[in-house]
Length: 499
Ligand SMILES: *[C@@H]1O[C@H](CO)[C@@H](O)[C@H](O)[C@H]1NC(C)=O
Ligand SMILES: *[C@@H]1O[C@H](CO)[C@@H](O)[C@H](O)[C@H]1NC(C)=O
Ligand SMILES: [Zn+2]
Image 1 (tube, rainbow, N blue to C red):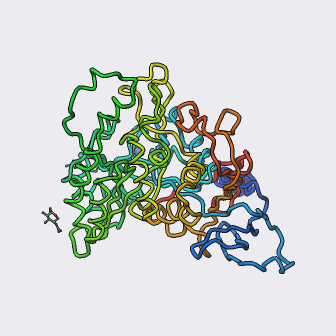
Image 2 (cartoon, helix red, strand yellow):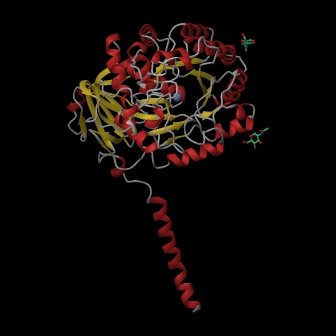
Image 3 (cartoon, rainbow, N blue to C red):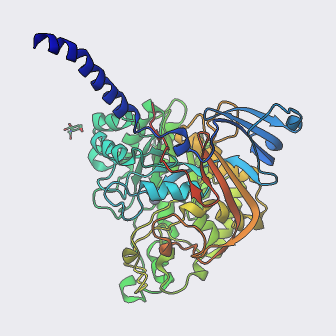
């Protein structure tokens, strides 16, 4: 008996270690599950590759997920090169980075969710999303709630995803709580200067924001702010036609954005060299008011405040005049304003006063969008756009003569810088091979016959439009995750943690 035990013990431990090895390794998908391409060393060639040095004709060499060389012109003379994917005239660009996505997971995954949102991203040429700390439940406002986020994202993301944490009154004056969240790896914080529409995400005032910036300074990470402050309104919207867009527009005038920007600028001076919050940065999300706010921001930048601003494709594509009664798909906050404002936003973007673009993809379930009764005052505010932002920006921007380099700057380079993603945002040696391949000239109708991956296409304001700019392929860290309506089988995106 004793003898048998001694003979069995090594055998048992061998079985146990094999089982352990299997459990540890099996969940990791194979290369073939992560990528629609069998190789991990290959060349992507094209006549239009967008690099920091301009648009070149040549090839990008990808090896084990990174860009290892960028070759101009006569590279084809090298006959030893195998595994070339030649995209001809199609544009090869750095993958888009969206610093403002609401994926609503965990807790409200029926609104979007990590799998559907990141598959939509891949189909749209986006290779990295930074998820907002709200509309999921609970909101990401502590180390513990951030852990729930990471758990929800694990093995369910098809592109890379980073995370913003929430700055709320509850944690703003609690340094150890904020540091716990930052140490856990959020890339920065986000707060609201008006009610967020989500109960467990209350608004902050300038004191909270000042405090938040002083903590962020140590970590050299940004604070993103929804800049609208509620002020007394003229008239009573309750008495007006709730199906009319102008009724809604009057409830959130441009003066609310201006008031918020003015208030923010009383604390952003702390981010100047030598200031108490030097190292921190303030980023104004989804600016809609092109008039007064932009001049104030420009002046602050000139004075040395560390401040940037984004706008979104829906403010550049649509105008208040065009929104039909009852079409609540267009409701968002701040609201889409008049066409003269839209012109000024384009001017500001092209002129460099607006630094970058983001989707602010903020979906919900169709019932809460109130599509049936068309009540603008009751409907959920948020535009669904994630998969379409590249063709939308391009289609509406062509009128303003925008270039491929500008697209790459607004959608990749500047967002990477904001989020502190050192190895992303450009087709450059040493960076991750995050690449979007698309045909700017190809037109398509965004209707039911188009492959759409966001969870609720019916609530998207872009449905029914004709766009140009078709995404052919998307690579994330060298994995071909999307190609012609097909996704790789496994979700091999990486959760990005700040360190
Ligand atoms: C600050 O946050 C920590 C960590 O979340 C918590 O344990 C502590 O009770 C909080 N302190 C106050 C004064 O709320
Ligand atoms: C920033 O501006 C505010 C309001 O104008 C002022 O009270 C404060 O002293 C300034 N702070 C710094 C660091 O310049
Ligand atoms: Zn948002």
